[in-house]
Image (tube, rainbow, N blue to C red):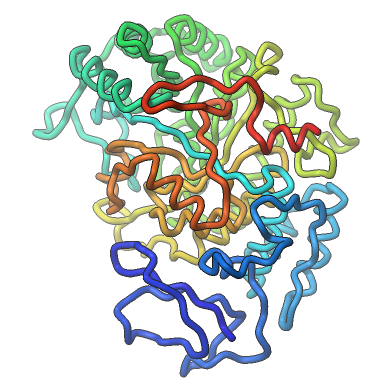
Length: 503
């Protein structure tokens, strides 16, 4: 029998059924977990098992796929019509061998998308077992005024636009109070490149968040400022020089860290390709500068994230090059932490017996924690004539990211851009994190995302359990959080998956 899952138009799970594909008759969105269907919706070939379908069959999850079962093997996808090239890739993964760009091209072009998801899920379970992470956080966009005019962006405003804003200290304090009251552990703050704010505005912003949260009995980790913003701050502070840009970047990050900055988000990476850069976001920093910012942050002991914005004018090969550049930068960071690279300079955390880095290593340096694939929303942008990526492309890109980025501990399904229902599917396609409670994020919502901007922790835990995993609340640095109501503390030991990986 063919397994299917049905979602209503609001993104909620509406049920599952078998036998034939009901196309366009129920008013719902159907995810069909089968290798292929003919024009009438009947299946071809024998039944093919897919772990994706087991999300919605809670009473029929095979023992080998249960949340508590460790994934020690990476089996080649099985069943009829499976692309034999995936078996070759599975063998490389089992040996802990890094995938090539050509392997990535296979993952992107094979018709067996569910085989790709199975491989990514096996790698994800090797790293994290049966747990999936979430956090309680709040987003603060401090200003939408920006000197740039990127074609894909609907967030930015010019200073004199009627709906331009810049948040003052009282607004920030009010947001901190709401975050502390909600029991949040993180404040995520980014904004436009405001041409007139002084450098002191940004250090005061960080200091206000930290001091006000402490005054109210909380402790908010400040994750703030993309690499693009950091370079902008170096320029307005007049410390940025092309012949020694690392020095200016270091000057900025040292002062932000002194004010209380805890980590950097991964935004502003877009796609590391000069052609795409010049056509879609000319004027923004290029890939080498973005990587320099994160390299300096790692040297200062700050952890960072990374993103890839896909589904606009870039090609799939350009996405793979982007991932390759990220994992090369991560190799450098992990070697600084004491990891041993292979003769080609690669450090793979997905190899058998490999141990992911932990926050206790930050005295030696920081590292990339998470890759966050972000789908492009064309509505309202200068590229609104483009269709944007489809759901299956979102699943495939996240799975490819998990398989290619073998030295990134985490892959995040950012539910605010993917929808919570899609994030559940992504947990079975390589993701181990769905982000947090959020509470309003102007950059994505103005840019076309239609998801509700806030969920409570109970809804996140329920979504994770429905997907077949055990929810684990984390802080920004992936330390396990223990909670009694709104009061929380960090667990004495690493999260379960890290303990398993280190054992």
